[in-house]
Length: 172
Image (cartoon, rainbow, N blue to C red; front, side, top):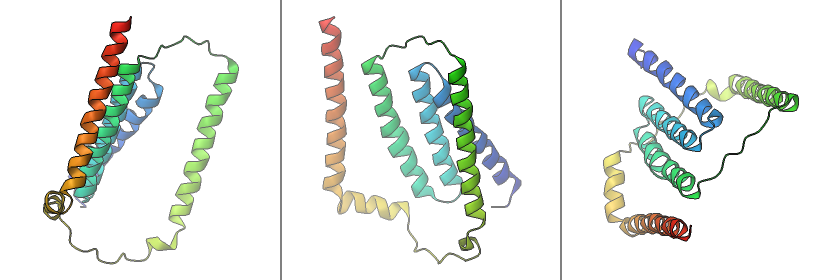
């Protein structure tokens, strides 16, 4: 974990997460915002994998990129929200600076509390060995009914969204 490649990939992923997260809140086009958010979720999943939490990384990618980001994109594409032009005034600029100031204050408070925490000096107990193969086996044996029900529910939701969108198009 102390190799130069690890640190390089850590900083590259850090930059990718920051850039895509900032893009997700600053683009004007909602489709671009949704795609940026999906890339931020993907980079966070890669972070987990890099740090040795493969299961958490794959769950992050499957759930957030595969479900949440796709759902957000469906909503954006099916709802077709209008973008209204706004004129920016000095009050908006003050509001943005206030938001940045509050964000920095919260970040500094969290950073100080993390570094003053006594739990950093205590070694964590050993975690039991858990692999993705064991999880996969449990999903297709013990939890096959909830897994299939979830898949069916997601499929019905996508089909309903497509039907509602096609009815909306035919009304116009």
